[in-house]
Amino acid sequence: MSQLGRFIEHRRTELGLSRRELADRAELSYPYVSQLEAGDRQPALRAMQALAPALEVRVEELAAMVASEDWAGSIPDAMVVGSSPRLSRRPSRSYDESPPRAREKMLLSLERRLRDVPPLERIALLNELIAQAVQELAVG
Image 1 (cartoon, rainbow, N blue to C red):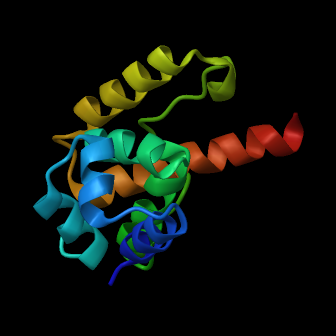
Image 2 (image 1 turned 180 degrees about the horizontal axis):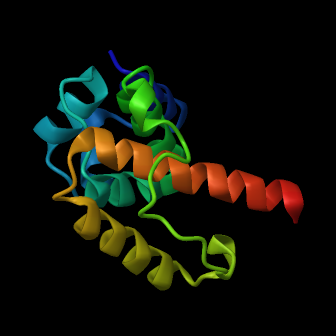
């Protein structure tokens, strides 16, 4: 079972929900929720967006679990943070300041733009963004 699967099962039982009730709340199919919980599938962004309110958590928490499993130890030395010249640093408003609809649009836009990027390169790009955000938090 994956970290996400264990979390879904734990949180679902904590809320007193059956798998079917969770599926109904999230408007996802029962087999899909069952596969996520068993660790047989990785969720799409839209599924995480549907599951988060049903589990009463933030979508970022679910995404972090998926990311930590997929990315842990999978980045070659040549693709370390800071090695990609593609990302430029732009000042932006805080992600938390964005209205929920704007945040959803940003996530969907990012997902669409990265869809055709090879997985390891996508990981390197996202890790660089994370490092930049952490650095901005440390400075700010």
